[in-house]
Length: 116
Image 1 (cartoon, one colour):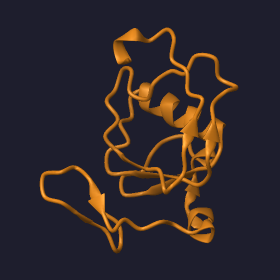
Image 2 (cartoon, rainbow, N blue to C red):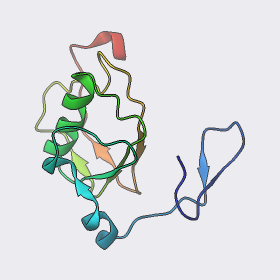
Image 3 (cartoon, rainbow, N blue to C red):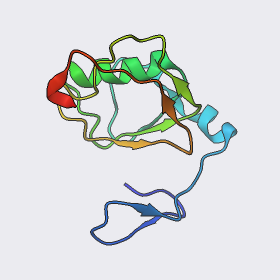
């Protein structure tokens, strides 16, 4: 899925000229904390560690996120989670995850060797 002002290089899997969402645009998106299931075509913001955990939980419970876009609204530090459960352990993640220029740091996976 591409965004306004974005294009892809054929076959590369990478976006060029990608749009960076402003703080106001991210704030106007549906927060992942406010939903219990995905709606195809929707764009969701992820601005907290708890929201990223919720994304993993919903996907791992069987909803792939296909047709949805998930946008990071802040840098996330996962140092409070000693063993991260990867997104897509039982259901493949099929949505679009847009880091929006942010980082996820201190992610540790120790018990899910099949995903390393």
